[in-house]
Length: 106
Image (cartoon, rainbow, N blue to C red):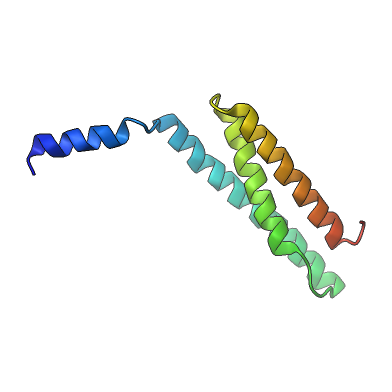
């Protein structure tokens, strides 16, 4: 392949990608991972202190990761903002239900 063909292919592939959206997705992933770490620390500390058995910790971590990721995208991106916020709220509700189930509140 010639240099011009490679450059043209690269431009065509990158034409649909928005650098700002890529950066926001990266930061959303990082924020979600941090929230998972904090929530895992709280759950494991509680579990050690109380001697609890089976719990829905893994599921709540996945739910909070999704909630924070979509929420961050909804705040930072204007494209499909309402969809990101809606999805974030749904995942947040799932997270709260899992946490309440963990503490046997519901």
